[in-house]
Length: 160
Picture 1 (cartoon, rainbow, N blue to C red):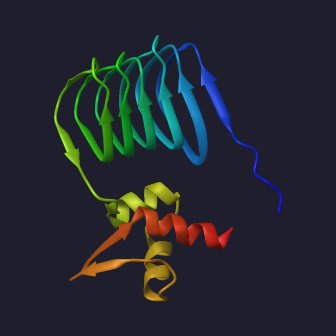
Picture 2: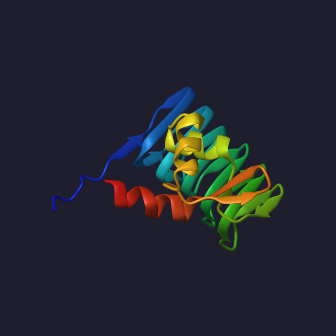
């Protein structure tokens, strides 16, 4: 079995806008960024970085400055980090010396139909079709559908 080549993007520039990665990538930002960041894989905010963004990702590691909201599976704040904004994460660690001014909400990996559609970059109708044919792991609460991202990731791994 051929090993997939790791994708790394190291950015040391001033950027503005929206960055969306639907495939896993290791993204490191060392400069300035203003906008929206949506990633799969690891997002690393370096010590010299200054980021103003709404961040959605899997693994977010911060050593620099972030203003905005962070929603991720795992968030790590190193001692040199400054975060001003709210964090919603499954797991979070904050080293001594880090600055965090905001609210933190620990959450499980349950996501809605809209969120799993965005996460997988698949139309909602296709996901509903998968639900109706028992192809994708789902939890039903009345008419509401909830997806555990870890289970969906495991399911997706068997499809590739």
